[in-house]
Image (cartoon, rainbow, N blue to C red; front, side):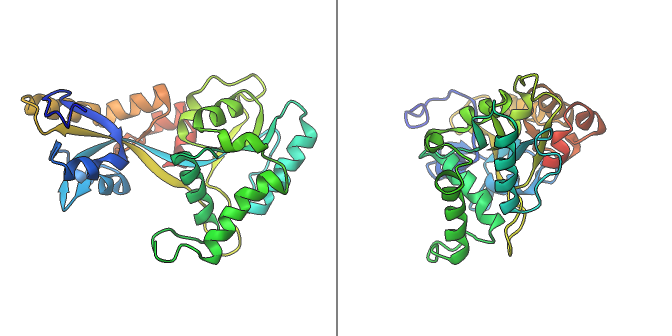
Length: 275
């Protein structure tokens, strides 16, 4: 609403990567000055619109598979093994409510969870004129089977968003969960603390380890009268030291490559996998 009204505030906007092109096309943003070479290149590409950089990456998200290392001592190597491991965990620990939890609600979470599985099954959504491929269908059927065939995910998982998914895992209710790195920063139940693993989703035959990439970016209001100050603030927020400190504090994975330091990995080992 502020953009549409031509307001000069807010000067600086934090947003999901999905908004940059829309806002740039509408004339709401002005180009940013951050040096592309210091950032994750996948994230930099999301800030580009018609050859101009309109957003500066702040932190990235890599959705992967969380698992309880006490219940699943060896990380699964295949998609089918996720199911058998979830079944075994449910039989072992009767405090569990879910062998696997994931975002199945009708919002972006269902899409990102599907994108993980789609890569694991060798599929792709790049060609929108040919979505109905064998691989794409197999990935969707796998998610469906977790609920209705193998029953390692509850039927009400179709209402879950990432908050409930992460909280259930942190509370000790799920042996596996599909979620983002922020889970590492949640308060963990005693049974979960020290027993947490994070990997890409294991592949099916013909697929590759599956992840979904997202994140948050910083953009400058085209109407701001404080361009120099805003760019100075962006430089500070995206400096390697600040990105490392933020990652340690809240488990938001740095978008700046130089922020992945030994200190970061000591304090947040999960982020080595994210890197």
